[in-house]
Length: 215
Image 1 (spheres, one colour):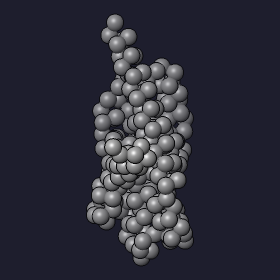
Image 2 (cartoon, helix red, strand yellow):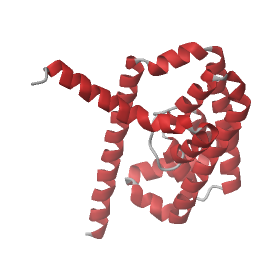
Image 3 (tube, helix red, strand yellow):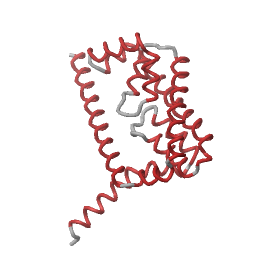
Image 4 (cartoon, one colour):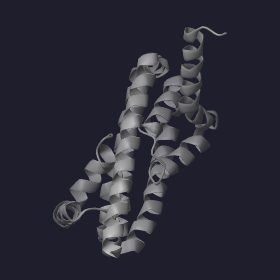
């Protein structure tokens, strides 16, 4: 019979591998992995700091890659935003209204109508928990010009990833040590749990509102 401590250690190890594993897959593919994760992370995949972590790790390991990887990360993110835009823009204002409560809908409509550019720039620059996807979906659904949306997203994401690259170059060893630490791993686990709970809460609320509308 295995000691309880051994069993718990094995469970924790498997948990860590299941979380860090997908990031390592992208890491092994270098620029292609960065582009792919950028597309997924900015469209429909929820992986807190995933793209930033991958970029940090790649550049911290080899500083000369910064000039190559920052544009690639930016391109992947903008492509992901474009895919999100395609879906949200097609649903339009009516689709957006069905996705959220009336109060939230009125809030986002007012914010996009009054300060869309500011919201998009902040959404693309700020790290989680800023509601990046909510900003993009609201702007697209309310028919904010696509060219302006993608232009603002490109400039903002390029600035954000340039900052990440600079941090990786300046604090390379510390960055790698931090990313590999247990404390950082558990911090990411906690943040991911919060994101999952928040997403589940939103989905349940959306389903309830849909049922009320049908009744």
